[in-house]
Image (cartoon, rainbow, N blue to C red; front, side, top):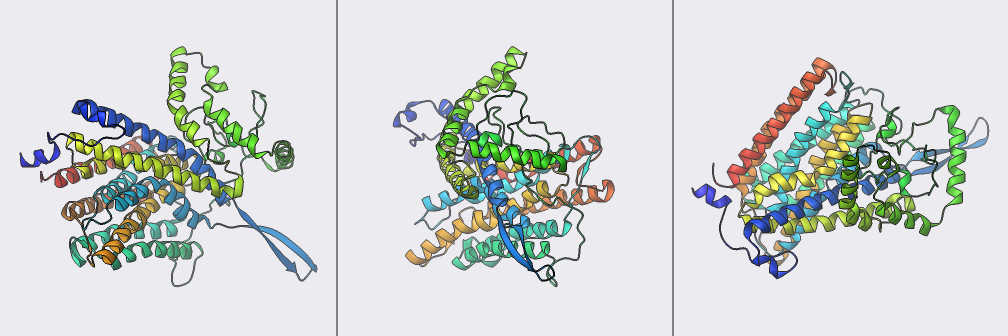
Length: 528
């Protein structure tokens, strides 16, 4: 009974979100409202992911002009070189961006906790729970996404093994800090080393990608696409023949309320009508000429920005108007109406083609931070009203909701990419970023403040529960990786394959996640 009393308490919660009158409402009704608000914030996170991905694509596409002199022909040769290395972009832009909700939660929790000798529990709990959600449910989804019989394998095993090593080491390092080196305490140097390990991950992955001697693994890589974010053709060639506006709707189908499918251009038969097939060589010159004319006709920034608001306020797309099913059409209109406030707010973000997408990229992260702050407040209130342990909420609802961008990115990659690199690399890289940045930076903030103000280290209030979760995660993740290796040996690929075995793998991964959640929740609640 002692354990169950730590989960549910009957104390009145005097905290509130918007106005003090909330405290007069019943506990059950307040809990219902806060859970609804939490779900709506997760919908907002999904919506902002659309603009974040598009801005990230523009950042990665940036190239620079290289002028070389040909001694044979005595002429200058001009070539364009990508600024970003794709391996570094995966770790720093994609993984960091999709993990930014969790990172924001942890940093906000650390700032609110400054001056307290004990670290806040919400951030680390969320990140460990998010790592489990990334590894198990997202892998489960990606395995069954390819068509029946279709196999998708990792082309660059060397880079994936490096990312996998640093992902596993992150959680081993976290356990060493909490239980071996300085039990229940985090020092300034431990926090600093945790953050610096993110730089080591970037360096090691880049060395593997460039095949540096003595550092990289001697593993041959299969053929992979030259451009991991290929150029898109403008969508002014549509069956509707409507008036074309050069805006972000060229790249994002926000009318359907779905998260942007940034990888659909890898497929010869895209399912989204807002994407068209990448043209063959004979079509390139004609399409490029039309794109240039369209761009020159409408380059006014205010016009483009205004169109974003028009698109945000539109409730029906041409595709939904063609639906013959009245109820399905009404359901889509209701969903668009539900998304409308978020889309209108995010329309204030500048168009993503400005400054190579950097302004839109940064603004998207700012909005994500704002939503993450609201999520922390609502989560605290849910814990206060229901009496549920904050760690339990962090492991479950909070971790799952904030990991939604990771799920979207990996699913799209597994569905559209020819290989499994992007889908699986996003999972492993996100888990590394969660620890090295998501836990390292908040701990660095609190340990630095405590060192300056009190000359004291940062203490972990529930280190035993967090360490137990790390052990459970490490054991279950080993089971996940072993199955991926077996699939590579038996089927020749990590994703796809015979539908029966794909679904068996999917169920197995989901069971691993359930085991992690149940055991971790029971431990932090004092039941076991």
